[in-house]
Image (cartoon, rainbow, N blue to C red; front, top):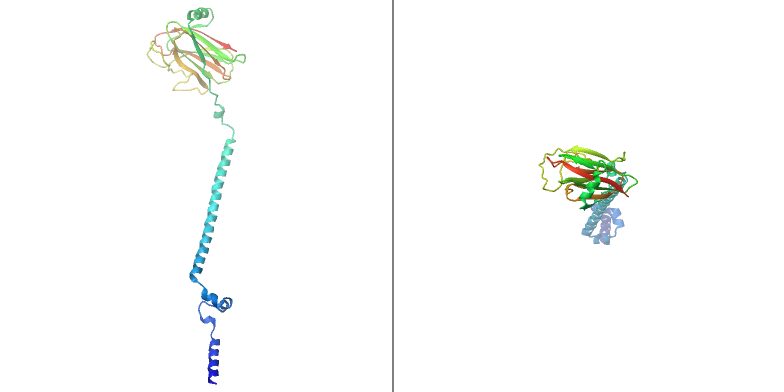
Length: 267
């Protein structure tokens, strides 16, 4: 009897106990988790798994940010490309439209038939002129549909003279060949014995102080030995415009120059 009473008392005590007496463990958890699983639980593994899961979530978040950044970076070139394409589709500016093709150099030659040319030109009107000291004579020769090139020949008495050719792209309004005389503003000493390029203040040619943007240089003004040999040449029309043939005596302070010249067209 004593044993039975002791056993009954022990069972009553055990039955009075509950899992709620142990902190962190509930009755529901005890029911769903067997004892073996609770005993075999490794807290370090659970922490590692939690850390790995957090890292994965953080990495996923970072990758999402990177992907968004990459998407923005990819969009930027496309936007830039679209902007460039739209810029390329814009019509050309007036300045770009005004650009002209490069001019070919002229064909030039010399001839020893100096006396023959002078004798022939003396019989023609306006073919023998005097270019006074310090002056520049410019012959304006417009292009014409019937021809393909302009030609010239000239000679001088006693001394050389500067010569150069320019082309004015301004549309032709007159087909007449005209001559203009301008004075140089330079005060250079005369050096007849020395040849070389001529620098002058001819605004029509384009000086340091002012430049005509419609003018293009074909042959720069250079002193020619026209008193020893005939100077000749030709140039194919680059388009519609006017040739400016310049006979430059601006470097001479004392000597006038007698010029024999002729200008004509050729097919």
